[in-house]
Image 1 (cartoon, helix red, strand yellow):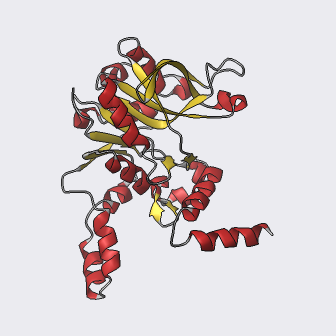
Image 2 (cartoon, rainbow, N blue to C red):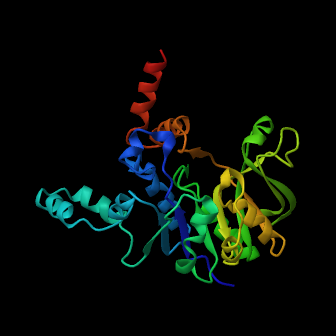
Image 3 (cartoon, helix red, strand yellow):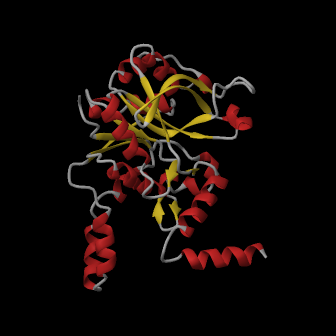
Length: 289
């Protein structure tokens, strides 16, 4: 059984819900507290033992590539000013040489197409897929636990969380089968089921581990909802040939693709910080008054 060594990050989206900010800044580079959104997602992948980071980018996304590069001028300036703490911080987030790859999605044809664009870099290996809009509090280990479940089952893994059953029609929902180890057999996947028809209240939270056979299916996948190549459609086809397992993530996910989710993430991440949490908490109390 091959290890999960690579992770794919689809970062080609236009971020239209964050205009006008995203007219000049990729949405993945907007900061939650003091770090870009993409940094939290990369940290989660590295925590899980991922060795190679694959970014599927688009036009105007070169800033992401620059961010993960070594900036000699900045480092020299910090060194000249004896800013040792800042130098150590930058070194701590610097990927190892040769551990990042960038490929282009020339047209916005959907998540499935973005994943397919990474096929030659991923090769014939299982891989993690992390949607950068969705971030978890540091240390809660969603992807790490998924890798552990993959090591138990050797198959496809989808992370899920609970939602209000009345809100299930807004999400991709899974059906839950027999529990196995730290996960459960996934019986079905339904994208935004009609009200009252959802098989559960467990929604897919933007974290996956997929076998490389998904690329063959995506190659010929017809366009679906929104006239885009949908990943869920291809996963359903793969499920007819390979088992899928669900991992029930018990933490909290913040959808930074929406303004309200982004604000909630900033509040939660700030409150969780030892250095600023108490100050922010008092400020929130004052604002509420």
